[in-house]
Length: 93
Image 1 (cartoon, rainbow, N blue to C red):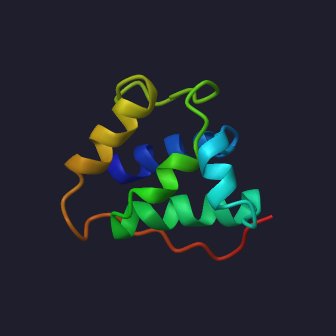
Image 2 (cartoon, rainbow, N blue to C red):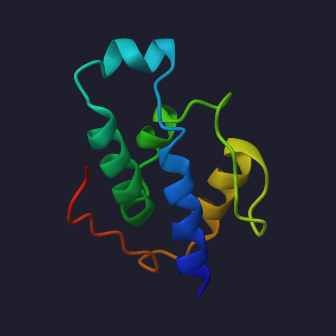
């Protein structure tokens, strides 16, 4: 149930997935779809790089069980037991 609530919060995160100036220079070839897929996959793998794709000025956390801002999002990711979250992206559009 917690994973379902967490993943629903991540879906809302998709709308805020843009790049900052520094990240844009490094990843200018990635589409927004590719960034979202990388972000969702990072929930399973623990990779922290895709979190930098999120624009902190536009990020809104809709899950009341998670702290505000990117700090709250990062805390939830840290608290997930290893191997507990699965994110299999089948299609992105």
